[in-house]
Image (cartoon, rainbow, N blue to C red; front, top):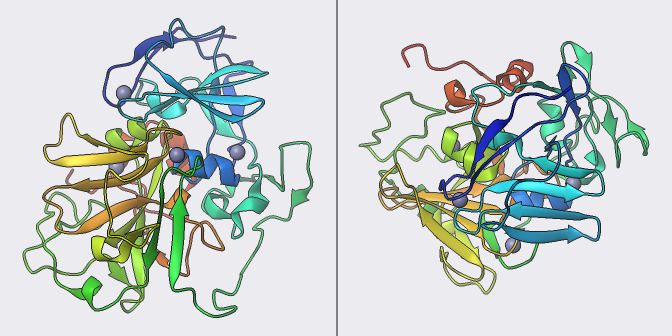
Length: 350
Ligand SMILES: [Zn+2]
Ligand SMILES: [Zn+2]
Ligand SMILES: [Zn+2]
Ligand SMILES: [Zn+2]
C-alpha cells in the first residue's frame, strides 16, 4: 500500500522534493536505532527513517556522508538537515521533514535496536511501551540479535568509580570534538539567559538572572526534549534532546574556549528567529549546538554527541520532565506513549 506523495523540505528551505512513503500495512513498523554511530552522526538519541518508493527525484543539492560500506546518508550542506538514508534495502526519508502535522501513515515503534550501546537504556527508558505493550529491546540488530530483558539495564549506580572531571563530546567524523566541565563558580554567575519553553510558557524573561541551567543542588546541568518545528527540521528526527550548559564550561578539544566555527562546525542563523543560530558538522551533518546572540552565555548541546557512560548522562544531566513545543510535534503518537515519563501537553494557555 502506498500513500499519496508528501512534501519534504529541509530546515533552510533550499532543498524541496516530494516522496511517496512505502508501507505494507496501515502503520509503518519501525525499530529506532540507538547505536553509537547513529547518535554521533545525528546528535539525537536514536534514528529511524521511513522507506520510500523508488529514488528521490533529485539529490543534486545534497551532500553525502558514508556511514559504512552499506549505508550512506544525505543531508543539506547549508543547514545540516538529515534528509535521506540509502542502504541495500533502498531509500528512506527522515521522519522529521515530512510536511504534515502528524505522520501519515502512522509510525508504530515495534522494537529498539542496538540498545546495548546506550549503557543506560537511553531513550528506551522513556519509550518502553507502545499501545500498552512492552517494546522489545534488541541488544544489536532487530530480529538478529539477543533480546535484552524489559527495562534493561534497570537501576544502575551513578557513583561507581571516581567522578570524571570532563565529559567529552563529538560527531561521527571526528571533525567536531569538545568537552564540558563540572559546574563551578563561573557557572553560578547570574545570566539573563531567557528561561527555556520547557520551564516557562511565553514569559521567558529572566530579569533576575536565575541560574535555571543548574540542577541537583548546582551539581548537574539541565537537559530537556524539544519537538519545535526548527529542531525537528534541522535534525530530521521527531524529537531532539538538548543539554543546557554555560559557555564557560565548554572547551574545544585543544583546551581553548568554545568556538562556534571551529573545525568542521558550520554556523547558520535562523531564517525566522532573529539572532538565534544552529551549528552542525559540515562533513557528517551532526547537529551540534543551538544558541543565540541574545542568549547570555548558555548553549544547547546535542545530547547524542556526549560520550558519557550512559547516553542520558545522568551523572551530569538532570532531565526536565516536560517536552517543549509539543503543539508543533510531527509525531504526536510517539509523545502520547511517553506520557508516563513526561508532560506532553501544551501549556494550558498556549
Ligand atoms: Zn537546508
Ligand atoms: Zn545505528
Ligand atoms: Zn562530523
Ligand atoms: Zn527546539
